[in-house]
Image (spheres, rainbow over the protein chains, first blue to last red):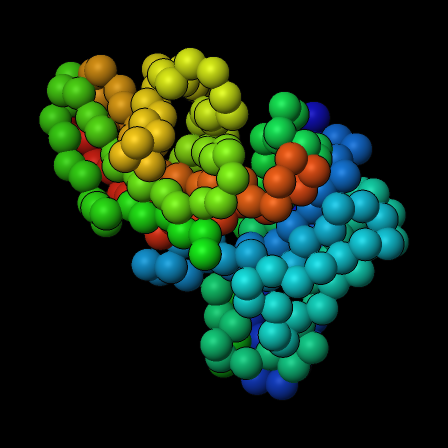
Length: 114
Length: 115
């Protein structure tokens, strides 16, 4: 009964470092996405994927990279961390289409860039 | 352009009183509208959605929402608030048509229910 699993839960980086935030789901969902949550800004979409091998940009993609080699995994890469990327990151997954579209969220990764 | 507005950053109500969290939207085509809730230090959880049909949608934890096409609104309501309802609430239209799954979130409304 895992749902959407995100690792790590917390991370501190120095400016310029790179890292990968992991996201895995066990519900066989086609759609996966990454959001960042900042105070007063709601959730903003970074990247999303509608299936293995298919990714696309959301509202705020700069500085982030994604790939989707399997249905289950959707890692988010920070290429060269900047203080502006300090945020809480959420991964979500769902079926495509309207009828079954309920997005399931991971517990989040709290990232600080110094 | 697509947009969603939650005009109140904070809503405060007494336990046992009715609550309303407001949402207005602007989307092209048929609106597919969702409400999600976020408890402290947790991810978001689905509450309810409007796709088509009855304008009054019932969801989890006794919440309901009323879709009003003429006013382009989708307000979240509950007849009797509980302290445990205190959380951050997000309204979100689903974008991209029926084959895609992109949610576009509002800025959120912090609901506080005091005993």
